[in-house]
Image (cartoon, rainbow, N blue to C red; front, side, top):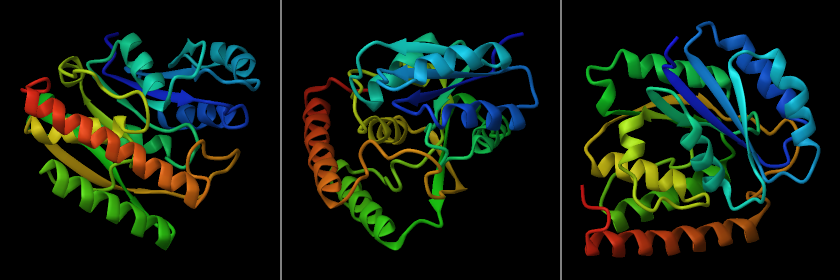
Length: 241
């Protein structure tokens, strides 16, 4: 059967969450045309052994290995290169994003008037007030600086047609990939549909970036640096559509 959706889940040191990822997707996938690509994104824990042990039990799953971690975005991009689906996307491995949201996003996309020109993305609810304030500030800056309406940029999942992915030029290898994808969707006049997703606390492990004020400051600096680079490339015509 032709694969309708390939969803990439980048896993960096997620040995405790991997069994949950498999079981939760198994609960919500009720159709045979969805594949889940779990990317072992240079993990240094026992992720590889757990992936290899559990993979044969789940018909919808595949794994891809990145030998050395080169960033969150690099792991996603690697998975997308191996994807077979007509529609592609990604979500997080930390179980703060419900696998059911991936199926819901696909259903929203399939019922849209023009699925090939549609980008479906979550919008997080029930988050801590400080995190909401941080997100709002970053959203305002990016919207003003890049000239497109951009908000809750790092919300999951992200689902779109494979032709949109094929149009990307020099996508970033870090957390800026979420910004790049949403910005390019706006710039290319895709119909961006947002839907509410719940964003609870992590069940296992620690975030690889959201570990306090210092980490947030580093994230801000990296995002601003990428935004300047992206705007410069736009002026030079690198990302012209």
